[in-house]
Amino acid sequence: MRIVLDGVTVTVDETPIVSGVDIEVPPGLLVGLVGPNGSGKSTLLRAVYRALRPTAGAVRLDGADLRTLSVRESARRTAVVAQHSGDGFDFTALEIVATGRTPHRAAPAEDRRIVAEALERVGMTAQAGRLFSTLSGGERQRVLLARALAQQGRVLVLDEPTNHLDIGAQLDLLELVRDLRVTTLAALHDLNLAAAYCDLLHVVHQGRIAASGPPADVLQPDFLAEVFGVRAHLGSHPLTGRSHLSFAPLKNTGETLT
View 1 (cartoon, rainbow, N blue to C red):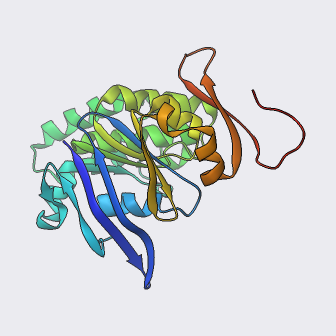
View 2 (view 1 turned 135 degrees about the horizontal axis):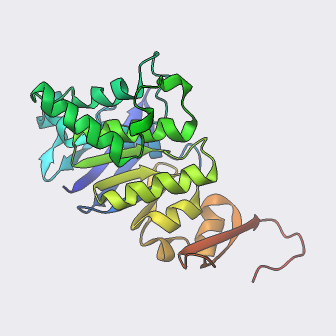
């Protein structure tokens, strides 16, 4: 499934948060939204999963304007892992994942099979009976991803999925998401994770798209200095060979980046 944002503008309390944004997410790719805090990344994602209605422009899923779809049909197409998901109200991991079946009208046995497969896919079968509130941050994110998988949407929307996770959990989660090869739009705070895992990047700056393209083309030092206010060096990770950034303050401190 293809996601297209066509001239999307979102205004909140008469203040434009994002203006005239054009984004395309090709089928099966992991596309990242990056940008400084407050640039409008989460607002764009909320427009994609219908938490906010665009003031102008349209969000389209395989050509269908999101506004023409029922809430149920939209939920069947788009699964979300949002930034704030609470503590689960003492539901078990299994019960949390099962809520992903709400948009569907499958037989109970079919729902149970799909939920079990989703838990297995994220490596959480052994924790299915544990209360969500007792899980670690990384385990919670895996459960929420399993819920999204159980929803069987053809589009996955992730809002800062690696926040508050240790580095091992961050890498595990993004490896898992990339291996799914589901059409995915993700807001990411860490530029190195975005460079390593995303097929394409869109940089959001002051509510507009400042640059788009493959990570190595977008994350150039002069551009990062302008948007993020840092000096940067773009190279290759010594272990993975993927794009990797090093940073230093923008002000001149006497040292030289090479």
